[in-house]
Each structure stands twice: as structure tokens, then as C-alpha cells.
Image (tube, rainbow, N blue to C red):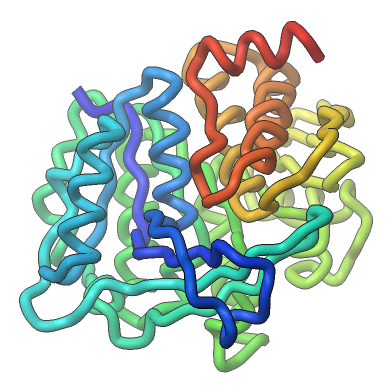
Amino acid sequence: MVEVLTFGEPMGLLAADEVKPLKEVERFRRYVCGAEVNFSVGLARLGHAVAYVSKIGHDPFGEHIRDFLQRNRIDNRYVKYDEVFMTGMQLKEKVQNGADPLVVNYRGNTAFSHFSPGDLADIDWQGVRHLHVTGIPAALSATCRKALAVLMDMAKEKKICVSFDPNLRPALWPDQDDMIHTINALAAKADIVLPGVREGERLTGSENPEEIADFYLQQGVKAVVVKVGAAGSFVKTRSGESFTSPAFHVNHVVDTVGAGDGFAVGTISALLEGEDLRGAVRRGAAVGALAVMSPGDNEGLPTREELERFMQEN
């Protein structure tokens, strides 16, 4: 039985195998990417039953994505094929010294951008305990934006906990004011909001983690976890509890993409298992640290045994 739902666009990823500008790279490795893909993979590796809600093209990338989800024990019953539009894809450069890689998106007019609220009609909510979503779908089309809002409302009506990671992608938004207004309106529908501090500054106008948290708490959110990079995270709840939680030290950063998704994996999985928020964000920090030690967007997400060993040793 499905325990967790997530919603987003899975894409084919061609990651450079050479440290060169993308225009000069001749060798790439193929992966599957997408923030919600990473979240789903991480939860499944920790033993949770997760279903992905999406739409892909009936093309080689789309078929590879369905196979990838199945191999990773992610329920793909709600991943629909589109016979007209193609699956999205990305190119990602290879970098050294832990720098953020350049990522180039090819996701205009993709199959997922044609997802609409009507595509949510067949979801079986029995047994679902949690919905995790990001702000990315809202940037892709008006129908995706509406479907995301409807899905969050459906979960709330059923008293299902909703977590929201803004996961800002300014390059996908033609109007930055529209981005801020839309993302903040979606965040207000969630129980838990997980912004990075730089995202929070852009969305609220403050770089102070507590002021960012207060902004969302005042809109009815139950808990806000502000990620502050190497400094860890700041947490504040509607009941007035607040604390900081340290990050784990990483000796060698290979790829920073997916760190925030890893943090969500650790935090949400721990909450599902009955951990308090303090323990949950500690696990989130551990999964995020492990995620940046491997190439690709989700290759470093740990099994339960790997996670427990890392936390014991650090």
C-alpha cells in the first residue's frame, strides 16, 4: 500500500564525463533526474512505499524513466504516457572542488507540462500518510500549477500531512514577481515548508532564518525548516519551538545537485517513523551530506544500513 505520494517531472539527464564547457563535451553518462525523482528514490531506499504522480512522453527517455522507477521500487501506476509530447531532459556539466554545476534544461512543451487537474482523478488515497511536493511544477505551465494546487488541497481535505520544498528555479519563470507570489501561496497550503536560506530571502525579503520561518508560520504553516548550508538548519514551529541543527562535515563534495532533496528524504522519512522534528532534521542533514558525495542526482542516496553507519561514525 502506498504510504507517500509525490508529484513532478522526471527527466532524462546527460551528465558530462569530462571537466569541460558543455559545448565541448563528447562523453556523457545517462541518469534519471528531477527533484521529486530524487525524493522518491531516497524514500524507497529507506524502505518506504512511495508513488510518483507524473506524465512522460512515449519515447526512449520516458520508457527508461518508467524502468528506472520500477527498478528502484517506486510505484509508477500514476505515471502516464503522452503520445504527442516528449519527455524533458537536462545536460549537466562536470565540475571540481564542490562547485555548483551548470545545468541546462530542455523542458519547454514537454509531456509533463500538459499535466492537468483531470489527470489526478484516479489517485487512490487509501493508506497515504504524506504528500511531498516542490514548487517546480508551478513554473512549467498553468495546468501544472493548477494541478499542484488541487493535489495539495486534496491531501489537506483528507488530513494528510503535506511538505513543500520551494526548490526555486528562477530561469523557468518569465516573471519573478509571479514566481514569488505563486510559490508563497503554495507554501501556505503546506504543513511543513523547507526553504533554503537564499530561497527564503528571495521569497520573503529577509535573509534571517527566523524571520523567514515566521513569514510562513504566520500563514498557517505548522513547521518551517530553513536550510543554511554548511551551518545546518534552523527550525521553528507554530507552537513556538525553535532550534538550530548542525550539518554533517563532508570531506569531498562531488556533486551538490540533489542535496536539498536528500535533506527532505531524511527529514520526512524520520517523521513517518515517529521521530520528533529535532531527530528528523538531523537525519535530513545526514542524507543530504551523503547525497553530495556521489555523481548524478540520486546515486548517493543511502540505504538504511548505509545511513545508520554514516550517522554512527559521524
